Amino acid sequence: MEWLSWFDARDYEFARQVLQRGTAALYFLAFLSTLNQFPALLGERGLLPVPDFLGVVRRMGRPTLFRWRYSDRLLRAVCIFGLAVSALLVLGLPQTGPPWLPMIAFLALWFLYMSIVNVGQTFYGFGWEVLLLEAGFTVAFLGSDQTPPPATILVLVVWLVFRLEFGAGMIKMRGGREWRDLTAMFYHHETQPMPGPLSRQAHLLPRPLHKVEVLGNHFAQLVVPFFLFAPQPVAGIAAGIIILTQLWLVGSGNFAWLNWAAIILAFAAVSDPVAHAVFPFIPLEWHSGATTPVWWLVVVLAVTLLLLVFSYRPLLNLFSREQLMNASFNRWRLVNAYGAFGTVTKQRIEVVVEGTSDEDPDSPDEAWLEYGFKGKPGDVRRMPRQWAPYHLRLDWMMWFLPLRTVHEEWLYRFLDKLLTADPPTLRLLGHDPFDGGRPRWVRVQTYLYRFANRAEFRTTGERWVRVPLYEAIPPMSLDSRRRLPWQ
Image 1: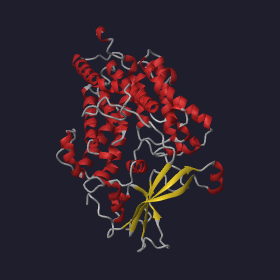
Image 2: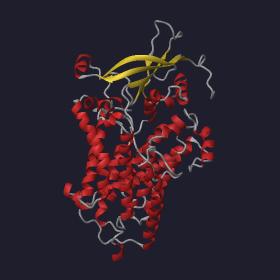
Image 3: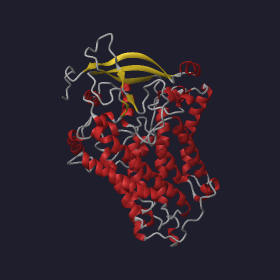
Image 4: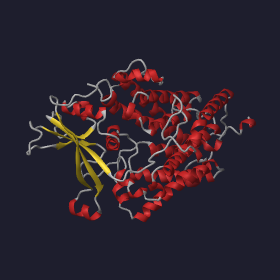
């Protein structure tokens, strides 16, 4: 039908493949992370048990499958189902059927993961959670191999990338002075939540290059996003710049699936001819005979109108002096506000948890042993690992403690779990110095960490230099622990 030429984006089949399969892969990782960590963090016997939180969810009207009942068994069933559906979408099997089939599959992932996020409390309070929800809902309407990609949905995905990038850029310009005087990268590689294997080398680059990094960031986030809406090949080039800058962030840190989501979603602005020009093995013609059924046109246009209506407040937020970061404006977590690192911390303070088997914690001969985490810095000789796009939620929350307060309810419950050598909690750690045994006492210390320079590393073999600061939580035992308000 000729009159549908404006709606059918026939030159964007490669973009659809990347968007659908890539988003499904991120959902797979999200459900895997939840399956491995949720019961210990938020389960029936977790640090912040969901059953205790359900009353709050009901009062706030948050949509969730667990609204009236939660169990670890149900949570695991949801994750396994999500993993199976995600895997099928990565393989492209639902996409071979009618357009409603991948739509239902993605909407199922969206609702199930939203059910988890809405009861996940502080452990699911990250911006990339709602980013994944919005991405999953939007790409659900990209259709299947039996229909051409709908242009309106591709534009909505580009609008999502614009909010993600431009929102982050505006947060920085309105935030700390270090972004305006180009000194942010003097600190960021060292103080970011979870450094990666290349973070130290990035930190040790000459300071003029760090200023170039900041300038490049401003260009990529404040200028380039506008060109995503330009005709091809300009839009494809703009997407390529965003992809390259995001790959630099992937290589220099661990930000869960945030950077990978930006990379995947940016392909919405890459046409088949542009993709073919860069990678000649990508075909130019996929299925030119495919047509769009009228019923599918009606569904897609209805969803397009819905998301455009939801876009009003996020659009105002982008240009507001009181810009919100990582905020949702509706209960369905659609068309959100994004942004990250409006300010950069100048010093890295690490919370270190220790235990001892000595009877007297104040004895001068006491032997305190340090618990090791999988991702967060601890052992000064250990090279940071690359975990992203997998998300280590406990490690991330440990980074936030010095910025807020170490006296978080969940941290005290975490210490209680260590005192009882709770197996699910210990599995969240990278190293248990008591090999599954119970310590008599635990305490929380703080240290100032910085990357060792090259001369220090050659001399000591240590990648971090740390200086003790203060005792944040004094020794606690099962018998003598302080009485806490929630106990």
